[in-house]
Image (cartoon, rainbow, N blue to C red; front, top):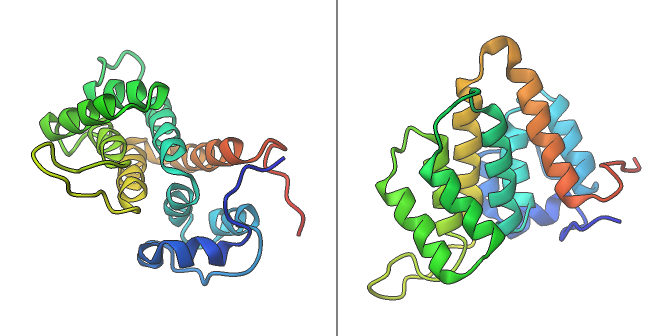
Length: 185
């Protein structure tokens, strides 16, 4: 049983107009996972990362980015404070842990994928500032999750990048589809 919140790719684009800036393929009325698979097989497969980030609800988008970034980290890498903060928020999506993730992102290095995963968690809702209410835009989690995954992909050796990209898309499909991503066309 699918847990998708959209019945067509077009609905994703209509819900998040910023998606048109990262995915050039025209939106269709086909199911989102069918569209995602075509996008992955298309001329610009990295655009599938952006579609995944917008397709998923915020918490799942953070979990997806966290898991895919962790899988692409070199073995023996030291703990990443941004990834740790984001994981804590995913496991307990309280406002205190969201703010902790935001703090980790603010203190982190923007060249590091884990920092962007922490931004994704920190921008998942509530206020962007601790001092006064500034609501998070609804697409900011998707945008920062996308940056995290693409930054991590950029660090993967070229010969391994296609497989890593496929793994990212497959992880997204597993999150939204209990049937393992099988779709009808």
